[in-house]
Length: 430
Image (cartoon, rainbow, N blue to C red; front, top):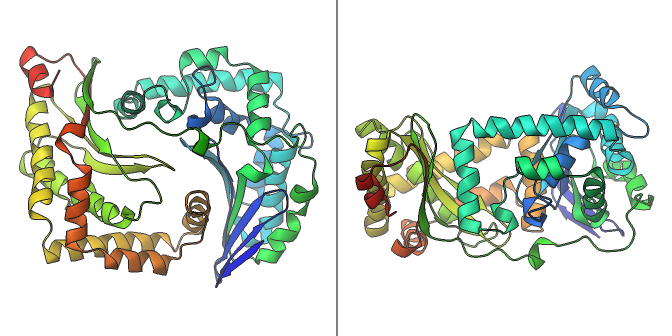
């Protein structure tokens, strides 16, 4: 199957592998990405962190290349090779000159088909990941979000820390990792996205080996636990405080947010910009500029296939926690009751469109955009279409979604910091 839209093309091969490309003429740089539709939501408590562990191990050598050779081949052409694991997907991405696209695809094909997962590399990388987990323990903002997601999603995979836990990583066996790899790293679970000045047909020809290969160890059995068969629970409301000897209290105020494909997503994107998307946002102005309560304060969206979280983060002194939360509620109530003025709406629309247009000049951003849209929407979304959708949002739309999201009985409030006094604990809802 083939799909076209101006500079965008899509091919779904017979084995289920999907290729999406966007030709950006005049660019010397090229971005290649392999997106795997698996992440923490596909893990059990025993296998927590296996997706992230696999991300590390695919850099560690194949039957034809050592880990050092992979690094040297990319470094020799001035490229960059990196990866990340999220709650619903894993991505391996390369930034290269367009003339080196065959090298990039060769390496991506090699790691998908021929990774060896050598025992000595497995043990070495286990130690590296345990160090990474220790780093999160010393980063209160990251740790707060990990615990927050665990509180609101419970035992579901969306609530598991992406890195896994010290216990799960220490107990993980090489065989567990290989089994997970063979179950999830399969053609029908993969999307290859390419952005830059390269033709779709050239990439397609190079990928023929992936359409004819036997994919070692991966038979005809479908991938295990697809996201849609592992439905997300409702985001749990409540108040939680975890004691830590930190200098500040790290606060997260959240509610259930939109799914990635929600028809209201553009109104909610703009609401996010208005509340905590920059230095002129209402939360930043009220909490930092007018009251000096926090250095860092922002809001963010975490949308998934069938769930989502809208959250607000601030770090403040223990005695300022009640006032800080009160100001968050005031900003929320204001937009619910009064909505936005015409000038406020225009400002955040211009802000969001500017961010989108600036990022569209980056091949890595375009590669990421077409990859994510294929995962979550199953279609191409042009920059022009996104900007039009942003323009269509009205002040009434934003007020409506604010009233839908911010229900009084559905807040999830979390704090990581020094033990609260009885008075602060009462005001916090403990």
